[in-house]
Image (cartoon, rainbow, N blue to C red):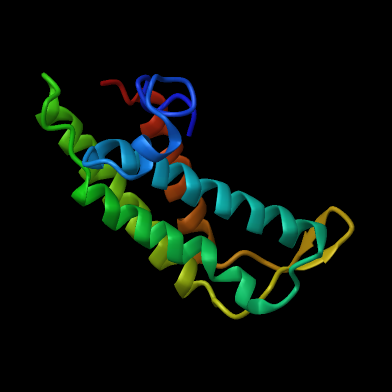
Length: 147
């Protein structure tokens, strides 16, 4: 959220309202991605702490993975010199995120993890393993991403 755009809030010369209510859709999308990631992080922390026990709290992660993946197909860096390479990378990441969200939803979306201490009980399904592999792949794609 901080380092995505150097001229935008909070580190740049643009104010909060200029950043979020301008015509610069690229900056707005970067900030929305950061907000999505923060929401997913908070939900996962609350679930891990046992404060969000209802099975419905398992839905935000795969739903936001699907939504974020779809948003990557609409996201472009049109003025950038290597916009074509960035578009391909965004398409690969978007496809991977959509597949990850679908795998997580197929893994039994209404079952919460039974937590006992720090251990997670229960066996992993093949859908759960596919979810994990795709999330790791997104991490690798982000590590090699360069504009």
